[in-house]
Every structure is written in structure tokens, then in C-alpha cells.
Length: 79
Image 1 (cartoon, one colour):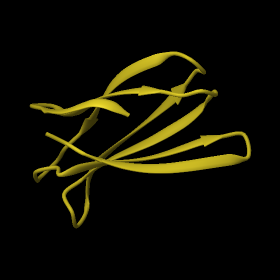
Image 2: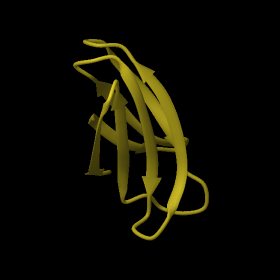
Image 3: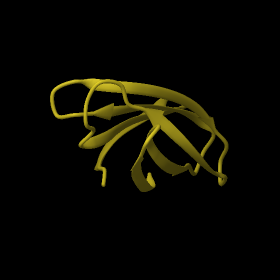
Image 4: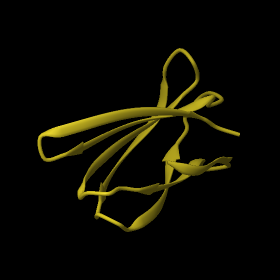
């Protein structure tokens, strides 16, 4: 996850994976999820998406990535 930024529609972020899989993204305010977005990723290709925000101010973006029999999770602050 790179270039995460709060916009009027949610949090914009660019994703890039080294293998094909699915990313599950959540905007987070420190206590609860404010929105979610699921995106399929292709190995080596970047994609920019907007994760929605409803009813709060996001402080971070949470992500889970599944590919084959593996998974990874990450969290980044938003600005």
C-alpha cells in the first residue's frame, strides 16, 4: 500500500502485489471500521482504489491480502 490519502469520497490508496490474489481493505478510526472495499490484484500491476468512509474520520487503512494458500495483513496511517 502506498500513496494513501483521505479524499472527500474515502481513502485513496495504490496497491501492488507480487502475486495474483485478493485484497480486503478497511478504513479504520481507531475503534471501528468506517467502510470496506475488496479488489482482485494481478501480479506486478498497480491499481488505485478508493475505500469508502461513512460516519467518522479515518486514522488508518487496514488490509488483508490472500493469494493461494498464503495471507498477509498490514496497517498504514492515513493523512
